[in-house]
Length: 297
Ligand code: ADP
Image (cartoon, rainbow, N blue to C red; front, side, top):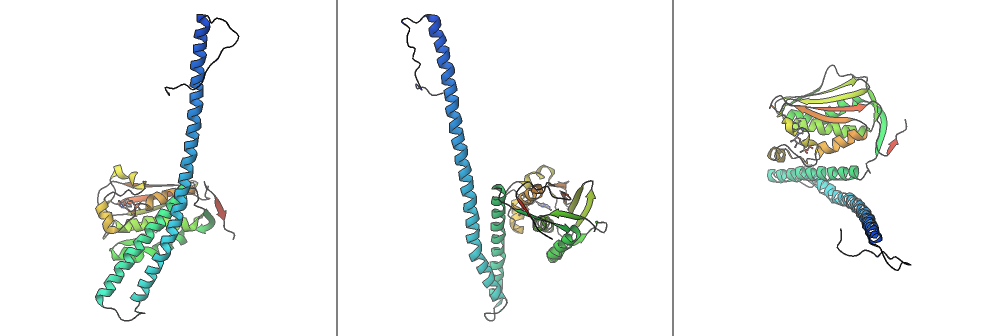
């Protein structure tokens, strides 16, 4: 409460004020000033909330624009590194090849980071538009396996779809975004597993469809199973620095699944070798919680 007058209560037409009247007026003054103060605070809060909303909007549009501006020159850097590696500009020494490969690796990492930051900003601003279509999950799983299999074998991992996975399941969802989630989970499993196994499964689970990505890698301590879904959280920053992650993959994936009306979570004993299992549960027809376009056909 402010220690300064905020108004005056005047009484007209009376020659003398009785003590009862004075105490009654004291009561009225106290009540009124409380009410006025509450109104003033309310107004101030509302103004602050509007200012915060505006700041949030500015932050998102700044991030979206920045990401775009950063991506354009970066794509050009990656493109020219590619051209040189292909030998189009002339023969290269071994050192040159090494350096160019480093430019590519780090450039790609930066591009992933920019893409993730942009996705997160869009989700937070409610501007991530999903575009749903009907598709077969088995096709998608096969696509994900073919995109990640060379990385898996580089780390001596067997990557496969479980033989009892149901090939008939269709869902209505944003194919590109579900692919992004699966790619993120499978890439993580590969990153945190060596000389092991990564298996993918899909099955009906009541009214829902459940996909799992299971690995035999280093596992996740049970007390960290929720933390890893928070932005920029990694179990062990030294391992991750080695494996080059952004710490945004899982939070984005969870939000994308939730936007379909589904759930994403992980289970692990935390014992190395016993690995981790990531579960995606989706309604067979996405219950989109945000703006959505439907693809025809
Ligand atoms: P990033 O992989 O880019 O660091 P994510 O959000 O995808 O970010 O993952 C966050 C963290 O969760 C990882 O850094 C890692 O510590 C842990 N994690 C995710 N998947 C696995 C997995 N399959 N096995 C072990 N740890 C994992």
